[in-house]
Each structure stands twice: as structure tokens, then as C-alpha cells.
Image 1 (cartoon, rainbow, N blue to C red):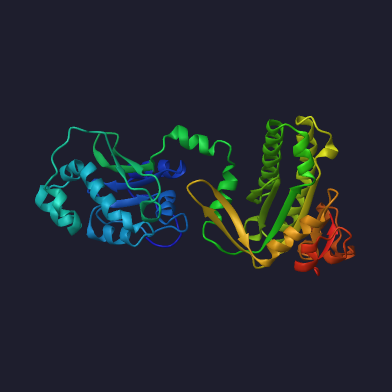
Image 2 (spheres, helix red, strand yellow):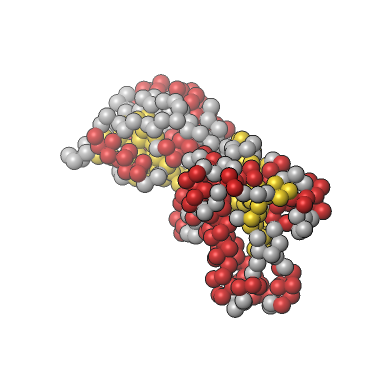
Length: 399
């Protein structure tokens, strides 16, 4: 099975029930029938096997340890680890595979990939009747990610007859660790992050926001208080971006960068509207952040620069320490220049952004793009030297 469509559920109703349960809970799982023919693979496992970029093809109907299945796996992005993973897997569940093969060792040697034949002679019966487990190399490039844990569970029908086996995988970190990593995350934002795992050209609105006069404020407050303030600002900024359907980019000092993709918002107009809504929401959120930090509202003044990138190159950068969305393009630099000019707590948006708004979205924002008068960035009294040098002709207005 190839392409991006979901695997059909197995014909056997018992195996289909297990497959649906694994699918609906987002598990990494494969289902084989009583003859160890692969009959199902969850979308989540197909995506992981494709490096979080695409679904891998699935050799449905092939023997799980056969040459056809091995050939398919070696073509996957994680192919370099699949031979070793298959050898470890056969050692782990081989007693069951052997028991399910009527012709014993001789028949099994003919069924498995030639590179696994030597393991067949090692196999002996096992007293494990319900579940087995093993560990294999991680799914990163050349196995660079943490190892994976696999559990094989026997599937039986209502009369106790063997229907097949479910092979379920998970990252090696415990569920407590995984839950801690994901505890503060937003599931929809995680999905949007996955949508840019494969970098590419994506039209998007860009938001830059930064705390004005942060250095004097840092000197006034204790280090602990200023750290708490920075954390509150970061959390508020991220929440406003997420609530508006955006992608949180990098945090630099007291600032944040965010992207609102046309493809996830539904249209260029919707992306532009979301960007403006996020800026307004963050401005309002600063009142609460100030109160919680024992500061006056005027102590927390945010500058906002909003711009449109028609040809942004947007993608995800993931390392062992973090994952973030980022973008390259002249419009990103222009957005930063707009933000630097928005002193006094203003939100400056470019003409390129505002003219993406259709009449409905503009009305929802109480804006009329047809009647707006713009000012060139270089002509603003607050224009910085970098703005005059890098983006003098960008036209902006306050929103």
C-alpha cells in the first residue's frame, strides 16, 4: 500500500477491532494475521517511519519477516536501522512465528528474508503465551533518536482461537517522562508543528513582538522577579499565538516570533486576520501579566510588527534539546524592522498584510483596508537606522 491514504482495516473482524483500537489511540502498531502476514499498520507508525515527513508504503499481505517486507522497509527513511530491527524482532517473537508455521524450521527458513535465515536455527519454543517485548534502535537519522520498545500481544477470538498478533511500539522514555514533555503542550499546535516538519514555500503572516524598555525594567527588579516576568510573558505570548491558530517561533530575550500559515488557517485572509488577532490578544494579556508581577500596566509595553510573506520558506528545526518553527525570507527581516519602529506600544502592520484581508475578516477586525492611509517605514519619526537601510519602502499603518 502506497500514498498518503490510511490502511484499510483487516478483513478479519477480530483483527479489525484491534487495528481500530490502535488507530484511534494514536499508537505505533502493526497487525499480523495467524500466518504472520502483515495486514495493518497505523498512520502514526507510518509517519514515524517516514521521518515525520510522509507515510511510508506498507507491504500488506507480505510475510512480516519475508523478503518483500524487508525490501519495503529498507526503502523507508529509517531504512538504515530496519535490518537490525528485524533481526532483533525475529529473535524476540520468533518462538511464536515458529509455532504458527506448520512446517517448522524448514518452512520458516523459506519464508523469511535470506538475511534472517541464520536466526531461524536459533529459535526454540517459548512459554510466553500472551506478550513478549524487545528493544530496537531509535528512528532518528542513522538511529540517532532514543531506542524504541516493542511489545507483541496475541490476539484471540471469543472462542480463544488465535487470530493474529499486534506489534506495538513506543519511544524508550517512560510514559511519565513523555507526559511531562507534552503536559504543557497544545495538541493542535503539535499538529501544526508536524505540518511543517518538511520545509517548503508557504505563504504566511509574520508577527514580531518585543518588550520595550526591558533593560531598565530588569535593573529595577530582582533577578528572580525578572525571570518570573519573562516566563509569564513567554507563556502569554505563546498562548495568544496558539489560540489564534499560529505557529510559535523562536523566543529572543523578551520577544517572540510567530507564523500564521495560509494552508492551516484556510486562506490568506484568515491567516492575516489571525495574526492581527494574536497581536491584540497579547497586548490585552500584558495587563494581567503586569498585575501578577506587581507592575503597573504601563511598565509592560509591547511593540508589534506584522507583515506578510508570500514566498516564505517555513519549516521545523528539531534537535535533541528542542523543536521550533522557523522561516527564511526577506519578509521575515522586514517584519523585524517594522517591530523595531513600533515604539510606544503600537502594532504596525504592513500594506502587504492588510490587503490580504477580505471584507468579512476586515470587518471582524473593525478595519477598512480600502480607506487606510499608509506611511513608508523610512518616513516614520520612530524609524530605526536598520529600517531606513533594509526596508525603507515598506508601507505600514497602526492596527
